[in-house]
Length: 433
Ligand code: TRP
Ligand code: SF4
Image: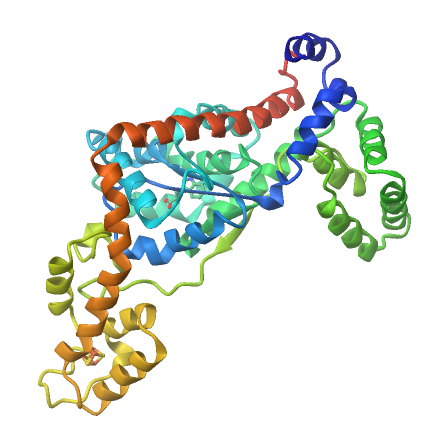
């Protein structure tokens, strides 16, 4: 069948997707595979991760992998956009990043884990998106000027650096991921990704015979669903009934037997417009407070104030013992203020309520000293890390195992991204199917 399918698709283009029984079968097996069920996120390879990465992102990823279809990748091309002059660490850092992911419980059987440069579809989509992205949109991304000033020692007046938010948009849109867990600093990038998706759909979403395909897709939902959809569409298009629009959207989201392509087509058809080739992604903001580093500033490898993931318990103990506290609490007999103490901010993350109130009250009344206050924290960090250390062992000593996980992940990722790229190129008139 695949052979015939290829032959046929080349002749008939898009139309075959709607008629081919094999395809409708596949659509059923991918029914959970709609944009709203997909999560994608990435991290630059910066080497060994720290507990700030865990509480700021990875802990959330571990949870998400059981609730969504998740794609997690190491953004090695992104490292090149700012560090093209120092590339000798990228491979080692990529390995270390992946080991840390596996250590905290990101599982290759629950999520697709891969390295960006092993999935060429990212770069291909980046190029396609660049065709419709106004330069001014990229120049306006806040991080563009900020980082150029911030990293004045580097020459960042490159095409690659200007385009990196667009590469990020391609990372996301290649999987038609609906949700992207990121920190607040990435929201502008998500906005760009949405704007570019919208523009792409507007420019290229008008496939010939769009209405015909849409009608066929409606019929695939079954009689009752088709009637509901048509009525809602009519109510919206004829009377501007936005409740009907919202209802129909929600209703489409529940349809189990539509392929992503048909579903997006029907979303677009609701509003009379073209097909949505690339659905708009939303940020999934993590509500974790920033993790303070040992010196009280935000924890960051570049500040040298981090507690690494999987750090030896003795080292954690030593690091927390020397950690900055409320600077006004100079002597043991001075009362302190937990609200300005970075150690207490860690208690907020690690400790149960009773420990927190013990620490806060003891601090304010000078009933406890900072050494006492830090003790349960040291324990809590080490208890959390113990399973990470154990899990990492099998991977650290076995690069081949990690490599196999990444090869498998890249394969799975490519399968999905390829579908998008085929659609994207066909929409842009260079599908040659
Ligand atoms: N730019 C992100 C960062 O610096 C990393 C990243 C690259 C990313 N591509 C992505 C995050 C896609 C989410 C989705 O943190
Ligand atoms: Fe900070 Fe605890 Fe010392 Fe108070 S007692 S200053 S909260 S470390």
